[in-house]
Length: 277
Image (cartoon, rainbow, N blue to C red; front, side, top):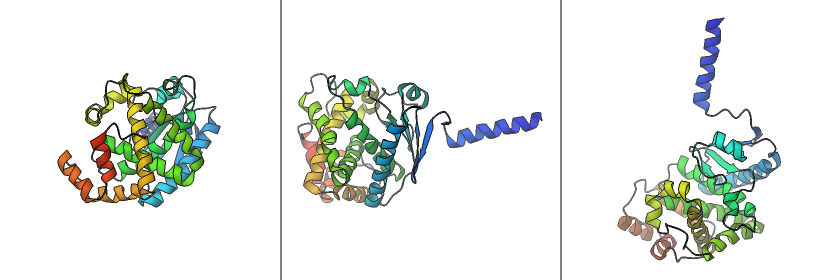
């Protein structure tokens, strides 16, 4: 009996180690491509997010010919502290690893910090699709050259999907970044792309509003890229990066952007942060 109990305990520990966290205390929704786990009381919110992520997943797959493994967690503040290992402010979407996408289940002080008198919940709900895009490039091992370029690329996929499949949501996607950019940079200690590259984790954890300013500029740039180059520009970047698996120094990378006709990215680099909406 004792040996049988120990065997079962060992099996449980091995299973936990292999398959990650135990989500048995969370609700669960199952989609064809992924599972969604949610805090109790937020099934409606989780369903809305799951349906949108499902459609975006199919769109990204069709565009990029790749399918990542993803779990989505829609968490209240208490569960955020319990299930997220990144220790980011509640409300900042992120990955705990290359497949576990974590988003907030409700409005929160971080979202309100950008505009206390106006809810930004509709905008932040869309960011699940930005995080979904990270799963595609991370799991496909696409070399996007810079951390900021990965963020910009995910915003381009997000904007492309919304513009093509949910154009009625474009105001929710574009209004918030315009407001943040228009407010200026006086309160932010970091504004350069190299500063972001060298302080990526620090800015995300210690200066979340500053990080939101960067993201707002990448959202604006993504919108301009889509307007100028159309829905296949994200695919063009993906294919070009597949053929360049090694990280390039700035001079070589700029030449590579020119040779691959990815000039909007080069223009953004050279005029940052005045690229604007």
